[in-house]
Image 1: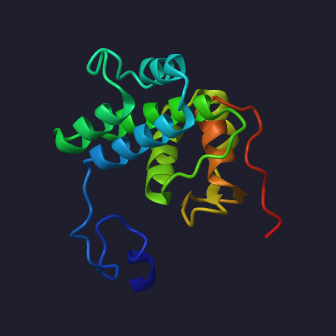
Image 2: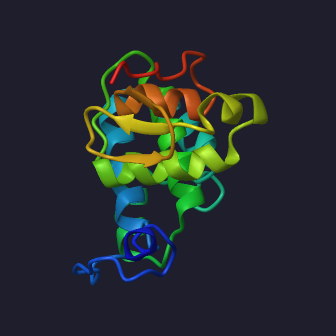
Image 3: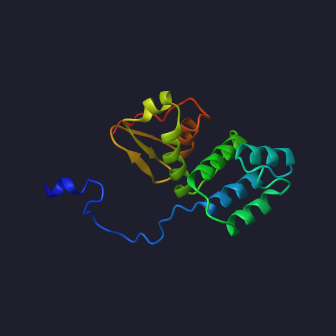
Length: 169
């Protein structure tokens, strides 16, 4: 019975340092905006499209992406929803270009996205563990579906139609 209690919520599992745990995503959001700036260099219309897609256009109308990133860093608390919207906008902006997301950012966005993705996509991944092979995160229970974080995010955010494949392990 003692073994079972490790898996229950609020159990007596081993404790670690959780002092850095926060729901404030402002710095991660600012970093996503900085990456969008790098991807949209020399194309002001791409920067405007990113702000529109990320739903930051009203709040930061007329500002450059570096100004937006600085304002986000210095501003108030931001949650997971704006971060996930910005990640989706960044991936749309990138197209087939490579994007390097911090594992905490990609993992948080994927975890949020799986709860908001349409039912048909959720049915594909719902009873599985999603494992990002390049980011060191996984969540879920059941057979493992593994792929790079980008492929998992593309599927969950509706940017691609290829689900992460089932792992042979």
